[in-house]
Length: 383
Ligand code: HAM
Image 1 (cartoon, rainbow, N blue to C red):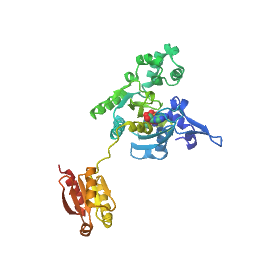
Image 2 (cartoon, helix red, strand yellow):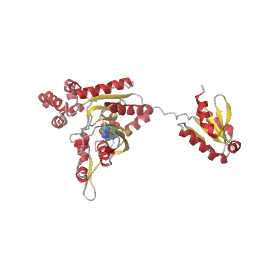
Image 3 (cartoon, rainbow, N blue to C red):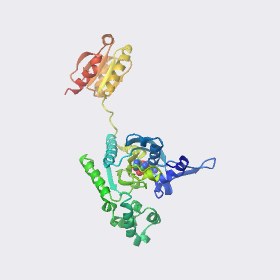
Image 4 (cartoon, rainbow, N blue to C red):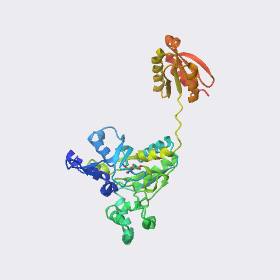
């Protein structure tokens, strides 16, 4: 392992990739009052890989499954959906190369957007090979573009030299036809990469997650190998349409100076997700399973205790605190649509009991508090 000072110097750049957009023109770098050059972190994956080794997680059972959430900084021209201070929530699974982990990551992202009720998510999927098949493919792509260099814009010409795969990110209208006819890496994968990609696609199909194969998806960071993916949404404008992006990065640890170690993950853009949520229909609050009412202030500690027991079993319990008429509280419970209300009054407290009221049949029973959990679960399970 390289010494800390050496790792601290410039590893952020190497992590993101020297030819990535982030390093070429998005680094948020400035001089502080001590005339030191500072760079704000642009993304979370390279730092997580460093933390994984520096914190000894590589010595724990593998893979390590990690998550992070926080602000990141990129110095690009701000516009709707593109901030200089952006927020991401991300996950990484490090230390295992099974393609099933790729699927696990994709499914997690998918179910997150489902849970938020965001419709119209478009999952784009590609494989960009590895150090075995990519070098030959890169040459093939260069050979294809070389006779057309004059037709490329200045940014694409730099990409031709530094990272030819990124020519697929070009939005220049004059380059679109060239791009369409260019050889695609999915057609030039080595056998292990092709097998891994086939497994990812098969498992996603089995899990009924719709995806679109996008042979032009190469992602803006240089560290990816094999599976890459993005969750996009058409209502976000053009180049800013990615809500979440990720992929496998089996070469990143070695590029940072550590032992070669595979990894996979994604980061979701919280600012863009929030923009979409603003437009989506308001979410209706989840209906609680149980409404809990104390008849008297002195009954509230008992009520809080039993509410805690029910919550520890995974039930959603709303406690209605404070004084109030019982019938008014029952009306509130009915308006929330709950199936079960529990009540504790002085008599129940004295006997160590609670009343379980089935809100649909409007019947109720008194049970010992220690039998409350099973009675509530039984009542909830009734048709
Ligand atoms: P990324 O594609 O650069 O990937 O960013 C992930 C997400 O962050 C994007 O899909 C987008 O929603 C959001 N985002 C990026 N830049 C901006 C911006 N300027 N303004 C608003 N939102 C933005 C990564 O950062 C990788 N570290 C993801 C990853 C994790 N790959 C493997 N593990």
